[in-house]
Image (cartoon, rainbow, N blue to C red; front, side, top):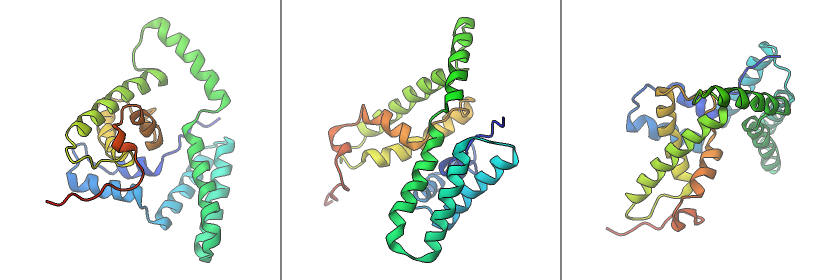
Length: 208
């Protein structure tokens, strides 16, 4: 069975980033993650399906992604606004499914964990890598929030910023194999976020 791994929209954008991205490049990527061009986003999902099927992937998640992406594309081209929410919500669920391991992958992880821990080899198993990345992500966020004197950085924005910074660190340290999605990083940061960061809506602009 093929081991082709889904490349998310965020990772697709970040794959084009140099080792030392400029602030302008990071800002552009974050904006493209938050507000992607729908045509490009849908094309990426279908491109991933084609790559997976070409490699021989048989995971049910690929057929779900193909079905939902094709439906979202059809709705988008039809301009039927009433169907937008449901079709893109289904597409979001299909994409999110790739963040969670299948039953077979759970079994492989359990076996691998027992083997690696007994051999004392660090950072080879998914859980160990994720714990390392989680610690780094939380440190990054804490430093940024400590410097946020005007209390303007909300949890969603911080998750996007940390995602980009963490990706660079992971790339430099060979920790990309199990690099998490933004939603996972957000769940990590929610545990340490200051109260104002979790409030709904945008912060009010402070008069200078």
